[in-house]
Length: 250
Image 1 (spheres, rainbow, N blue to C red):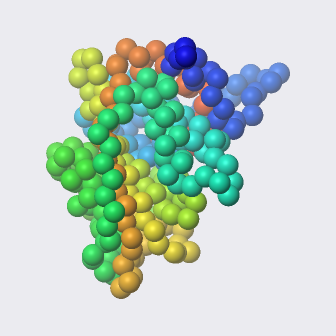
Image 2: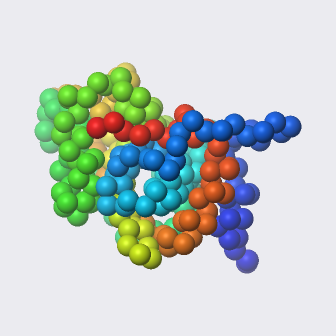
């Protein structure tokens, strides 16, 4: 069976965004050429401190947003679950040229009681990233989160994206690059906890604890490919960029 090229996949996959017919596409207010070191894009909080190239930052941000929209659109109500969503999300990234390898999943329970979620997941993220030197701004941001206004736009966007099916699923990405490739250490923290809170990062785990699934994987993409797909992704997502990508003012 003939496979589609990444550009063909971007063009053909359904994101659930109504096409703009008879009108010019809106100009995004978000300047993708000046994305900061930490960005919320779709479902993920991304640390770009080790990837300075502005085109790579833009392309990765758009690619993760694209994959999340593809996965959400593909879900069948009352049939699919969070595992189906994650499988489609990962597949969408491979379809646009990312290589995904080494996914490991751990089922456990958060042992610390009466502690906020953002503090409880720091040890997991440190391990998933391969040490505190990778994704350092995300880790520091989580440590200092109590000093940040919990109504900040990036926190509101990130927490909104964590709710999926009956779980809260937080995605974190630490991006690095060299002359040829971009690598993403990607970590997912999934909480099975019933809460009416609208800010999961600030939610305090009760004395009963919380079931916790964690996964980590490595994604790689060729820098030339990322530069090629960036304008196509931007054109496909232009209608929702401003509502789905935000710089995190840490």
